[in-house]
Image (spheres, rainbow, N blue to C red):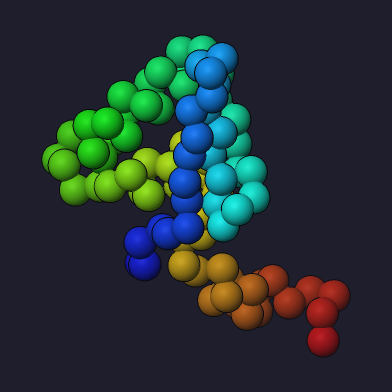
Length: 84
């Protein structure tokens, strides 16, 4: 599976965090969720084994990432109903 890329974040003066993906807003975190997110990014990963990175943390928090099997699933026979 390819690593996620194209994510960035901005911490605003009111404490909220805006996460963008390729220049478009992917999510806004406020309060405790924003603090927890910033702590994970500052730690460098977000996983106990230390195998992640900031891009992966942002992708996980927004849910804006693909698993890599969408094309295969689209072409599966059970998903062909109504399409020709």
